Length: 394
Image (cartoon, rainbow, N blue to C red; front, side, top):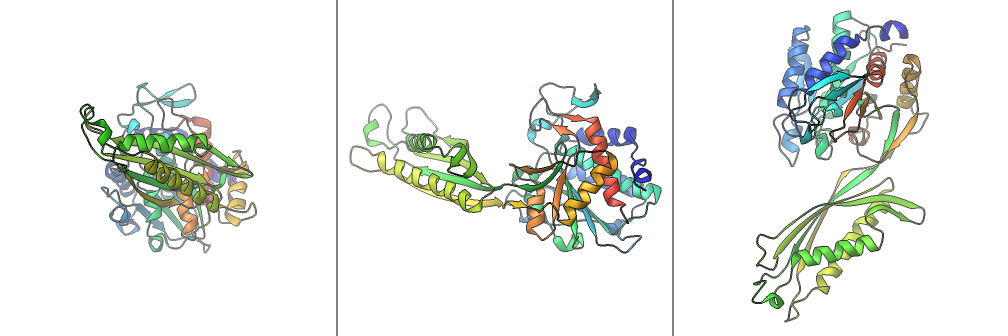
């Protein structure tokens, strides 16, 4: 039965599908054209409109957006618990203008300055290929839900705000995003925004009367770096990471900077340690604000905000969804290595919503860079696993 399912993976058709999807611009918040292409192909394959719906995730996201998550539900041909297959439609902005070509066993971008968009159009294609194969071959299957999310690259916003009821309460989920192996856990992340308000003055005539917001921010960042709170954070046995990613401020060189905004993040598999990293940022910026004063002793002030982007999780090796993924990997000759990720994936929120989910690969490598590629053998393994998992009625 495994060989029969795997043989339904038409690689020529699957690769062409992936490349067609990679050509469509669809950065986070502007996934409408990608969703429209998926819907068009499903309708041509005979899927009824009643099986297709969009939720309102984009209306709940702080970033807005063109459309919500695309959800397709199929009733099962056999009575089994429902299974979910998911992937995200959005790409990072460097992928806009992608011109995919096959070269040396890989799909690469013909433009060396443009990323491919395999993250996650390879996963998007795996899901679409699986659903089209089921419709075309009339394969037996349990009740299924297919979920194409939006705004994954903006902190997993689509998965965070997905309509769980619209998914039909799946018993387990298989999220496609990455290169390979079986990701059974992932880190959690806090997003940090710090606004430093200084005191403006003329930088040439009266610099002593000003308090530079950039100086305050720089001092705080330097203190965090010196104390080991930036980059790979190791405190005893506790582990995490943090990153200052954006610093904005100032408008003219002749004005002591009155305002600076710092964007940062803190990650750890340990929720308590992640909160400690956030507290270290708060203390550093508060101390820096007090340390920088003008000639009248006046100092700036700091407004500190942080929010949980996604919580960490780790599924046990004997969790049914993990066991199912291992069985599928072995059946099609793919890697069954169990992994824990240091980045967030849609599965973080699926698990938080009560859907045990692992993340599987579709051959994508070097995501978010101009060197991005999709390994065709990895892509074939991903497609074969998806078809196996979607049609496993044992």
